[in-house]
Structure formats: structure tokens, C-alpha cells
Length: 113
Image (tube, rainbow, N blue to C red; front, side):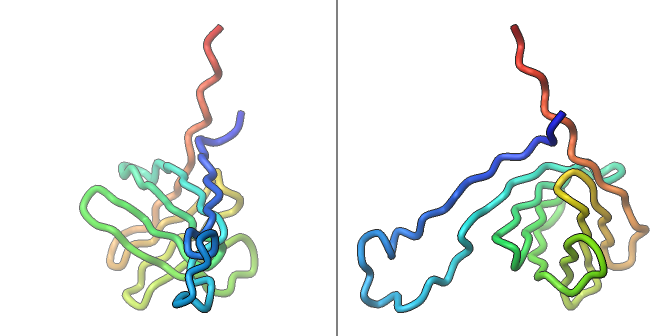
């Protein structure tokens, strides 16, 4: 079974309409939306290219940027928050001052016949 992932390819509107004031491509070329269960927390992760991830938790939003990792993709901020993934189905969430949480993306439901 595949994890509950929805991939949306973004096309920059400024490029499509020839925006002269937009001399560079400032956004990611793709976005992945993944919902994880991290212990007791439901966490939505919006991966913006490989550069960053925005995590939506029940009580806050965090934007983490990619940092070097020996394996997988690791994202962190200056406040001690980290999110480390291996593929898109598993991860570790470390929130500053809180215990580490293992994360898993629920398997996608099989289509009904």
C-alpha cells in the first residue's frame, strides 16, 4: 500500500504570463502534502521542493529548512525543532523541549469495489 500522499506540480503563474518584474523563479517546482501520525499528534507536512517543509500541528505551524543528513531528508529551524524523514512514509519529529516522536503516514485506503 502507498502512503497517503498527494503530489501537486506547481507551475509558476509569473512564468506563464511573462512577468517582467519577476526576474527569478522564487518558488519550489513541486509540493508534496503528507499527513503523519506522530505519537499522539496529527501532523500535516507540506514539502516545498527539497528546500523546506511546513509542518502544521494542532497548536502551531513550523517552517523548517533542509539541513545536511547522513541518510534521508532532515529539516530544522533555529529553535531546536527537527523533522527527519526516510522516504515519505516514516519520520521522526523533535519539537524543542519535548520527547522525540516516531511518525508514520497512514496507508492509503484501498478503492471500494
